[in-house]
Structure formats: C-alpha cells, structure tokens
Image (tube, rainbow, N blue to C red):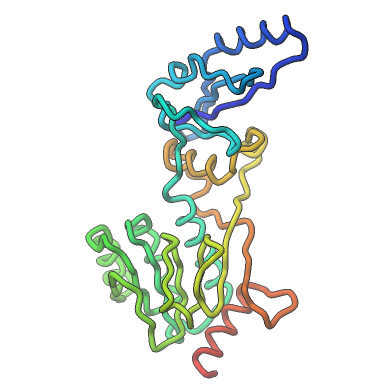
Length: 278
C-alpha cells in the first residue's frame, strides 16, 4: 500500500476557510480498493496562508508515511517520517517492453545482431528469455549474476541458448542493440542502437522512452501534478497491480537523422543492416 497526498485549496472568506481547515485536519485517510491488488490511500492536506498545514498528516499516513506519492510541486517536511516513494523498477520494465516490441516488429534475422541488457541490480531476470525468439545472442550486464541462475537454466532447457554475463559493457563484432534497463550507458556503446529512458546517452542510434498510458480507471483518478509514472510504479511495486507489467513507454524519441518521420522498427532494421555492411 501507499499514500497519495491530495492538496485542498482554501475557500474564500475567513470563516469558510477556517471551517474547511478544521474539517480537513480531522478527515481520515480514504482507502481505495484495487481489483486483484492491494488498495492504496489518499490523505487530504490543505494549503493555508503560510503554506501547507502538515499537522496530523504523518499520523493519518500511519505505517505508510514513507510511501508518499505527491505532486512534484510539494516539498515534504525535512523532519519526521513523511518520505516520497520513488519507484525502482517501472522505468526498467517499460524500456525493456518498448525495446522488445520494436525488435519484434523489426523482424531482423535472429543471428544477424546481438542484444545486450544492462540490469545492474537484476530487476528483470524473469523477462530475459522472452527475447530469445528474436535474437540468438543475448548478453546481460549485471552485478547480480546469481539472480539470473533460474533464467539461464530456462534459456538452455527451453531454447538451447546460453546467456552471456558481463560486469561491464564491451562492443560486439555483430550489430548490437543495448537495452539500458538500469539507465547506465557507456562511451563504448557508440556504435550500438541504445534504448534508454535518459535523454543524455551514447549510441549511434538512440531511442529514449518517456510517459505511460494509464488505464481509464487510473487516469480518471490521477490527481493534478502527480507523475503518472510514479503512480503506476507505486501501484505495481507496492500493491501488486499487474496492469502495467507488459506496458511500453507512451512516447519514444528517435535520434535518426535520415528519415523525415522516423518509424522505430524501420530505423532499427536499417541500423542492423548498415552496421553489418548489408
């Protein structure tokens, strides 16, 4: 579970504003149920003349005070237990799904290129084998190879493929597609096609993902100023919501300078062929 802070603007008029402040301070947390997942809560806070009135907020949040989702414009108090929750896996999952979708659409020969997945903290071992139908050479850059033991065994038993593990990136002889799930890039990727969620990165061809399309139910609920990625990440990581497990980024920037209106899969296939000298 987690808590979304909802900002209430004061009404005009001294007595109305005073009554509203009193009612808001007394209002309890509201629990919102999720289908097939844990619920989340909303807590109302009100903006007074001197800023947000934090009295009682921590008590309302209870043991979820360190799992706060709030508008970016709100600065939580430095003292106390109120802490923003920063999703750790949602962007990694989205860039992996985005890259996989485009690789599938590009329909290049599986043995004509390599795929390198950078996953330092081993957030996505369960997904790696889903790439094997599209590429015969899969490398994983990680500091937690042990977390990939089951995945490596499945790759060998189900596909007859051997996953290659590295602690640092090295260029390959074949055209390489790098999926930066941890956001870490290297100057050594200068000739690769790189998928990432960070704008400043390396790569001969770069795909930068951003944004997420929420389900209609979540989109209707989303409060002004709350980052949809933070909301979707908290729902996924803290509530066990499965709505975004296969989601892709809703927007994708492409560095291709050859096409007036670049299409991701066409640019990727062109990169693979041109890098291979075809």
